[in-house]
Every structure is written in C-alpha cells, then in structure tokens.
Image (cartoon, rainbow, N blue to C red):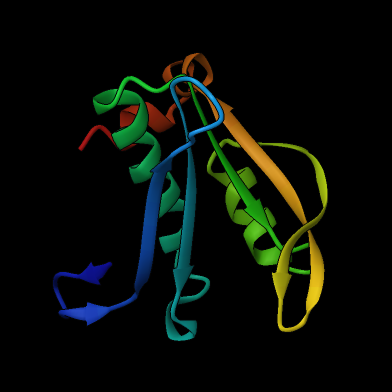
Length: 121
C-alpha cells in the first residue's frame, strides 16, 4: 500500500480466497509503525471488504490476529467485523506455536452497514 499524496510505502494488504470455504476469503494486512493510529488499518479493511463483497461476490471475509495484538482487535472491530473465537496453536512463529483470534464479516452485514457506502471504490 502506498499513500499516493506522499508516495510513502505504508504497508501491505492481501485478500486470499479460502480454499476450505465457498465464496469466502481471508484478509491480512500490516502497516509500518510510523502510520499507526491514523485510521489506515480500518480504511484497509474497508477497501478489502469492498473488493470482496462488491466485486468478487463473496459471502464471508475473515481475519486472524495474534492474541496480544490489541491494536488489530480494535481495527477489525471498528471496521465492522465480529470476533468469532480462538484457533489454538494456529501458527508457528519464532519457534513456538501461537493461537489466533478470529473475526469475520458476512456479505449481508457489509451491505447493511455504512462500510459499503464508504468503500465502494
């Protein structure tokens, strides 16, 4: 992701079709620390939801975060996602298994929210 006005690399985002579910995808994103707290995470989630629901006709988009990453929790909730639960020992990070906390938003929830109006791009 690049902030156009400053031509500043601010992070990355990915929407990946979920091979284990019909009409579903996962999202991942990371922002460079100098951009934290500016609302770019929420904007990124909105843009990826707009892509998934408005252009790819998905029914469900989900995300996972590290249990200690409270900033991501706030971002995902602010973007309209719902916390679903915990996947135990979901990923192997720096030599140890780590749980993930999962979030999702459904297509009908997206269409009923203000999110679809603010991210139709």
